[in-house]
Figure 1 (tube, rainbow, N blue to C red):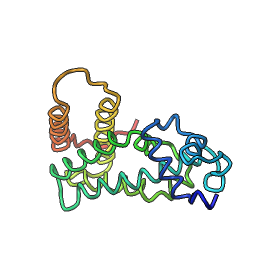
Figure 2: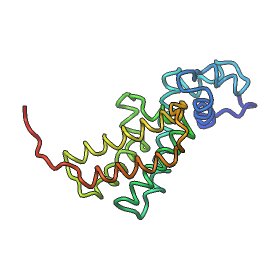
Figure 3: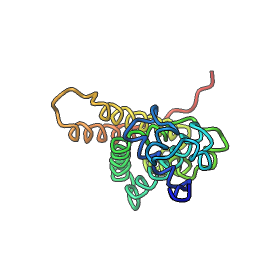
Figure 4: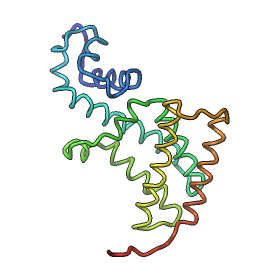
Length: 194
């Protein structure tokens, strides 16, 4: 193993890259071992099993994703922050489809609660949309609306799900403008108990 120079960090980095090229659903310990030209058993000092490998990818991807969003929204608010957020979101999801899928995995609490990237993604989302003057519970609804809209667009784009010849960038700008309009005119309703 020392001659291979394997470390937990190198294994996680290779797994993240393979998630993008193979798809997260096809990522296995065996695939990472083949990447390094070693037997599967050589990796078990760095990763316990496939589930742990997926968790490593998810945590690493969330850190990279949150870094990109943080750079895109820094010093901006309102519409400009939304544009930066949306562009960074789309770019990461389309450029790193396997890693992006990893950021949406349901992680066990001991992993998710200790993933700085996941926690930062949540904080950045709320901070960005708080700039529209939204408070709870409307803020959570708005975050869910924006996330589901951007997720849908990026997922369809990644799978070549848009068959119309209209330029995707034009459609995306219009989607972001529509999100801005919705956030600007978000319905202010008190929570109704049922």
